[in-house]
Image 1 (cartoon, rainbow, N blue to C red):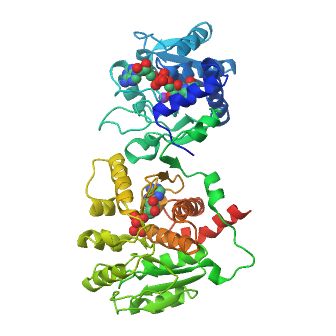
Image 2: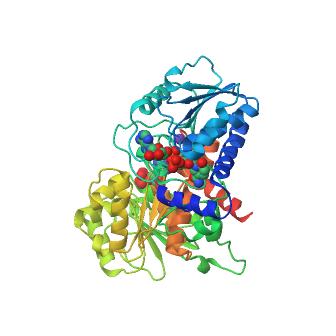
Image 3: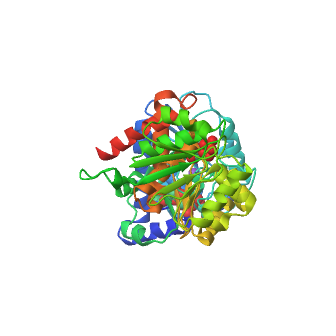
Length: 495
Ligand SMILES: NC(=O)C1=CN([C@@H]2O[C@H](COP(=O)(O)OP(=O)(O)OC[C@H]3O[C@@H](n4cnc5c(N)ncnc54)[C@H](O)[C@@H]3O)[C@@H](O)[C@H]2O)[C@@H](O)CC1
Ligand SMILES: Nc1ncnc2c1ncn2[C@@H]1O[C@H](COP(=O)(O)OP(=O)(O)O)[C@@H](O)[C@H]1O
Ligand SMILES: [K+]
């Protein structure tokens, strides 16, 4: 799914209107989709308090208020009575609601909440916000944020921009749900801004498909349609050679578990032949826990050297450690190896400390979490800036950067960004990243195109995490539980 800027969304609205629907009918349609969702999900609500701004977001709010009232709900509409300069479409809907005898139109300052079964609808500002909140709107948002009743934001939580960071400490409505039109907005996917969105529901209001097809963007959300295009079912007439050779390199005394999880994940993701290169202290553990993988020992307690094998894909780093010999082993390997590889964890830390980034083969994948990213490329002000730097570095080094976070971003050498929306905070545990390394190595060894392997890999990882959380809870699920859910995800794809 494409992500558009506020300006592009506006153009998309115009394109849709040019195709024959009037702007007021488009607003009506958008409001109806919201009301349909609200009816299903907030059926027992006794009163809706609907806060409307002066732009078209406010217009949506007036239309939603009218429709809810017509369906028999108790509705109160709040506006800033000192500012009634509504946009033309908002004005049409304001006039309609004003004529309804059973709906009170109140000033923001009249807000009183007595009833438990009350829900707030935020239609103050949408993608047209062009500066931070101030005055009456800022005050009412601050007040609403202190009241513990459910809040539904229409299109965008008021105070957020669609596509850029907000100033620190600025006021933003804290929504429980965001009913957004047609597209995810970039700000929903970054930690500083996304935390205000609650659960995001994308309502398809049938904006012009031809426009959406051709509009150029570098930003995408990974959705199930994309995954279904990427996923290749296994061929009956195949053998282990068809599915590649994955070699997971890592582990050191006390951190054998990390490379074990990578190895198991590679197997569970379908790798044909799987090897683990680890120090001898891991031999017994690996051979007994993952008998399907072949073990190559090199060093006693940490890796001292490792050889290049033909026709394999290497995933290097989990549990690797940073011993001097291990460092040299990695740098030697990279001096002589020129095919794409996956680099994670201590392999990245070693490259950061030794200035070895230039040795990474073109089209390789690196999987830093924010701190590893900072060690590699330096500090940035916020996650928007981090992404910008990552896009520059991915192009400069011609590599894929899998920037791990709540919404992991896959950044391609062509500077495209694919945000992942599967996964959950149950995965915020040591070991989850090791699993991802195994998955990515396995997919690349199965000859998935590298961009597709990254997109598919992060989605699969998060989806398996979601299934693990469903069964065990976010608190109790373990990275190993996630590995055992990979199969269920594949089953759902092939059914
Ligand atoms: N395709 C879509 O996405 C559709 C969007 N619609 C709605 O239209 C909205 C966009 O409408 P608008 O462009 O009118 O934008 P807004 O409703 O966000 O309001 C923008 C207006 O407020 C002013 N403004 C901006 N920041 C301000 C601030 N901090 N303080 C005071 N005033 C400020 C602007 O100058 C502008 O006049 C969407 O968010 C959505 O709710 C729907 O009505 C129809 C379909
Ligand atoms: N709150 C979260 N929501 C979604 N995914 C998460 C969350 N926290 C962590 N993850 C995922 O778990 C993995 C953690 O990786 P990493 O930080 O490298 O852990 P480790 O190195 O300990 O294995 C990443 O893929 C990340 O996207
Ligand atoms: K809003």
